[in-house]
Image (tube, rainbow, N blue to C red; front, side, top):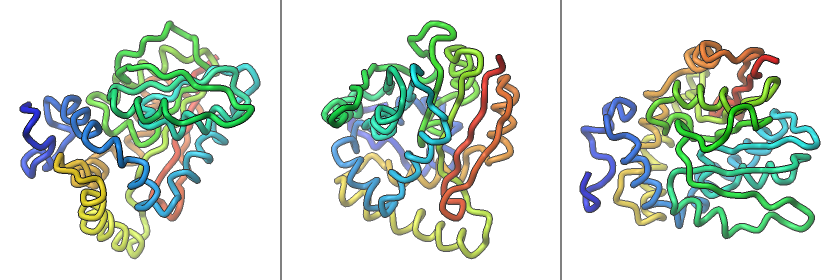
Length: 251
């Protein structure tokens, strides 16, 4: 892929999850939008992205002494939310250096533990087996080249009884809500977000296509179960615009 070319064109966006070099395109995309990523997140979710992340932390049921690994941490918003929990250690991992640069610039806050950040691919985590109590990934599982392989990695690094929390966008089931959501998500947001970010990578055209062509809720839950996780469930957020998946590694 030529660095001067956009990461996503109409051809690749037919189904971005079937593109052979998806990982390279995703990295190029996030490199391009990293400086304005947080601004676009806040504006285009009306601040709900932070509310959803706080809900993810609550769902994880962090206990004193827990080690938390936030995969595909991006600019570190969920990682920092976990640093305000009862965790003993919080680790953020992402495979785009530009996003990690943004994350490391954010202070944890007075009296909070400082997260550590590491460059890492979700499908090849630099962690020993059974060393983590919570694995989280927010708006990132659909960006992974091989979600099944990533889930196996999450399972590997979790201790028995450890929890997996996935926060992801979702297609609302209510037809009226879905109509308004799709108009905004497919036609308004890609234009305004690209303008704010000065983006030519196609990142904000990729976003709605990556959601609409990704695994639906039943398929995601099934994949988690096939990996070996138990007590798997999902909870819709904000009229079904987003969803939290939660599961446990058997003891």
